[in-house]
Length: 162
Image (tube, rainbow, N blue to C red; front, top):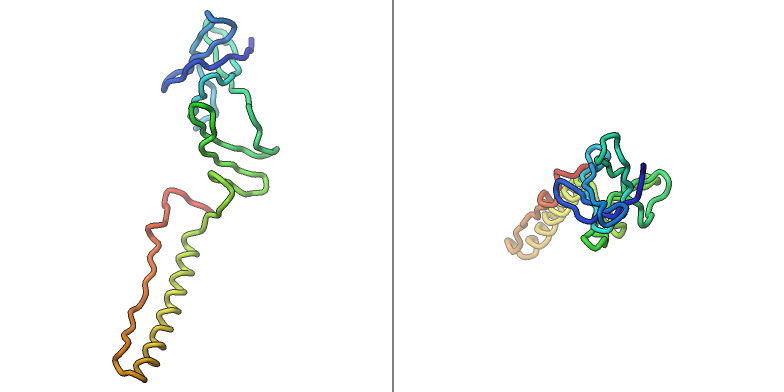
């Protein structure tokens, strides 16, 4: 039999639910897709099914409170204990991915660094020209101090993109 249950409590190794009445409290197994580790917040409504073994049941999933996806999309999100969304990753059907929001853009490190290094080279070449011109008027009054650009601290090796 499949029924709806209310989550009473969660811990690292169990989810406690209330099914039919104050006495029908159980800690069913939780069924999730492989690789996803998730715990519901208290009072979340779950779908619970009995198994062939008496007294053993399994949570099949949780009822959706809101729907922010369109067909073909997937969205992962985390909430605080009150159910307020704190962060999300949304894979959209237009081929985009929102990570925590849609206000700003991520950048590709390798082309950004290449562009900045090329610009640095051009600026340093111009500084040499400026030094030649100034020193022609007032000898030895201007020494070129080449600029450098290092954005390696901004690189995140743990997150890759196309």
